[in-house]
Image 1: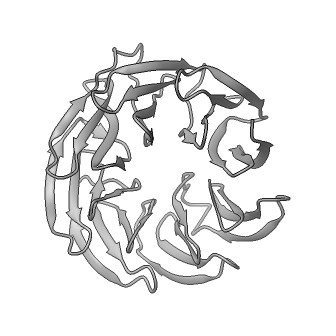
Image 2: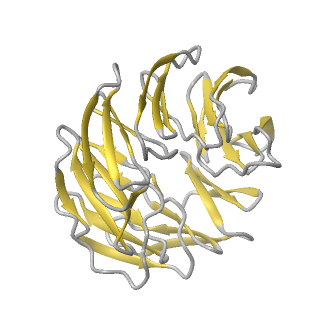
Image 3: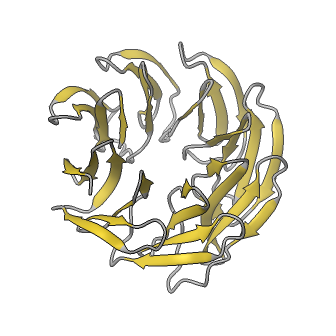
Length: 304
C-alpha cells in the first residue's frame, strides 16, 4: 500500500486500486495479469506524480496515475517485480534491469544469479539487489557496471538504504540476522548484534530507517529497534503473530494479526491500537490519517 497524489494505492492478489484518500471512493483499478494462475504480493508497485509502476506477476507495467491507463509494459517471466523508481525504473528477477521511466525502453540488463524479485535499494548512484544466495550486489545505476558483491547470509530480504549505508535482513544457519553494509565499497559494518531469537526469526521484509534507528520485523512476531551505528538493540516489541512491514511517519505503525499498533519510536511503548477484522498486511500513513490493508479491505483511521 502506498499514498501519493491525494490517493491511496492498495493491492489484492488480483488487482491494484487507486482510492480517493478523503472518502475511499475508487478512482480506478487495474487487473493483474492472469490472476487465476499467479498470486502477486502486496507492495510490488511504486506510484509517482504521473505514473504508477507495478509488478504485474509476469510483467512490469506503467499506468497513468490519473486514470490507470496502460502506458507501457515489459517482461514475460513467472516472477513478481517490485520496482524502485529514481532516475529510471529498476527491478530484479535473476537479472537486474534498468528501464527508462517514460517509455519502458531498456537502458541496461545485467545477469545476476540469485538476484531476487524484491524491491532493490537506490543509494549514491547505485542499484543494490538482495538475493536468494545470501549476497548483496551493487550496480552502477547509469551503466549497470558491477560495483561490488558481498556475502551477508544464506538468504536476504529486500535491502533498505539510508545515508550511504545499506541495511538488509535475512536468514543464515537457521537464525535471522540484520547487517549494515557500507554502500561505497560493500564492506560489512556490523551484522546481527541482537540476541538470538526463540524461533528461526527470518527477516522477510525490508527494514525501516528513521533518524539513528533501524526498525526490523522478524517472523517470530517481534519488531526490534537497532542502533544504526553498531546494531545493538534498543528495544523489542512482541506480538502473537508475524508483523507486517512497519511504516514510520511521526510514530511507528506496525500491523498485527488483529489490528494496527502505533508505537513510540524512541522506547517501543504502545501509543494506540486499532482493531481490524483481518490481519494487517499493508500500512500507509498520510498527513492526518493512516490507511491499512487488511484482507480484502482498506480501512482508514485518524492519526493518533
